[in-house]
Image (cartoon, rainbow, N blue to C red; front, side, top):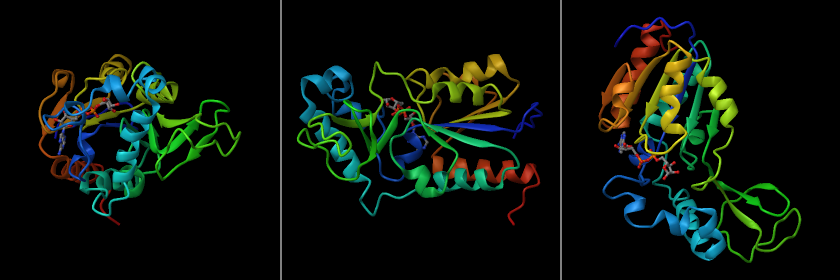
Length: 247
Ligand code: APR
C-alpha cells in the first residue's frame, strides 16, 4: 500500500450500491441493475411522483420490503468499515449514496445517507420525518398532521438536493484519506467528491471497486475486486500500518 503522510488522519468513505451487491441488493448501472429494468424517469423524480405516486410507492415498497428478507444482511465489507470506525484513532465518516440500512446494521454510527433512507418517509405537508417499515400508499395519512396522500419516501430523487451536503464538504476538506467504494461515479455531487478532496487537501484517495470507473485516474491508489474481499483486506492493512492491532 502506498504510504501516505497527510496532514490529517480523518477518513471519509463514500459508498455506493456496489458495497451492498454481495448482500443481495441490486446496483443501478450494472448489466442486471435496477435502471436496466425500470426507467428512472418513471420512479425516481419529483415529476414521476406527481404523475403516478402509486407507481413510485410500488417501486420503493418493493425495495423496502427486500430489506426485511433474512437473507439480506450486512456483508464483510460493511462489517470491516464498522470495525475501522471503532478501531481507527481519529474520525471515520461514511457518506453513503445507498438508501438501505446495511451500514447501520453492521454497526457503523458516523454515517450520512446523502440520498435518503428506505426506512423513512417524509410528509410533504408538515415536513414530519418518520420511521416507516411497511408499504406506503397514497391512502396513508401523516401521523403528525393527519394529511392524506402527503407522505413520500425519504429518498433524494434526481433533480433534488442531496442531504447534509455542507457537512459532507466540510468533512472532505479536513480528511487525510478518502475512500470511494462500490460506486460508478456517475451521479453528482458524489462523483465530484474526489476532485474536491484533491483541490482542498493532501489526502490519500483510494478507489475500491469491482472494476475501474471513469474517474479512476483521479485516485492515488486503486484496488479492484469484490468489496467483500478488497475492503476487509484494506482495513486490515490500514489498521496494522497504524499500529491498531485487534484488542
Ligand atoms: N464489489 C465492489 N464493487 C461492485 C460490486 C462488488 N461486489 N458489484 C458492483 N460493483 C460496482 C460496479 O462496478 C459499479 O461501478 O459498484 C458500482 C455501482 O455503480 P451504480 O450501479 O452506478 O451505483 P451507484 O454508483 O451507487 O449509483 C449512484 O445513482 O441512481 C442513482 O441514487 C442512485 O445512489 C445511486 C446513485
